[in-house]
Structures are given as C-alpha cells and as structure tokens.
Image (cartoon, rainbow, N blue to C red; front, side, top):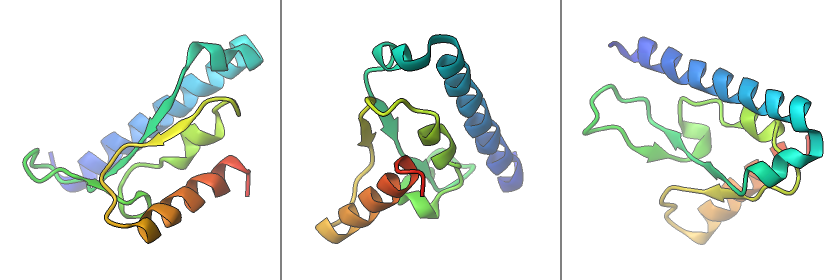
Length: 104
C-alpha cells in the first residue's frame, strides 16, 4: 500500500465515523450521549510501515479528526490520547479541539 492509499484509507475511516455519528444523532437525538461515554481523539503520521506509524499532533496527521467531533453530543467528553511534550503544546491541542466543538 502506498502512502496516498494509506491516506485515502484514513480519509475513508474519518468519513465512516462521521456517518456513524450522524446516524446516531438522527436516530437517538440527545440520547446518543448516553450510548457513548467518551471519545478518544488522536491523529497519526500516515506511515505505511507499522513500526514507523506514530501518533502526532492533531494538525500534523492524516486523519480528518474534526468531522467526528462536530457530530458529538455536547455531553460526551473528548480525551486526547497521545503523548504531548509540554504544557504549551497541550494548550494548543485543547484550543483546536475547543474551536471545533464550539463550532468556530
């Protein structure tokens, strides 16, 4: 699998997750939050070789992480699930997530 194929694969996953969340919201409305207790968020570098595949900062990865966040109910906590070097980097990642969740 080449890197463009790999990126396409992750784009398809993002699209699929977005469709699932949209279906849940349409089907159960506000009750969807009761069905999902938390949302684990991360992004990856897109390496084809599993030994070199790593989590990266949200803006540096190949996954469209914002689309599924927009479909979440407001009561679902979002957890950042990757190592972050320092407090400033944590603040930057949280700001990106908050911006998406606030609809900006």
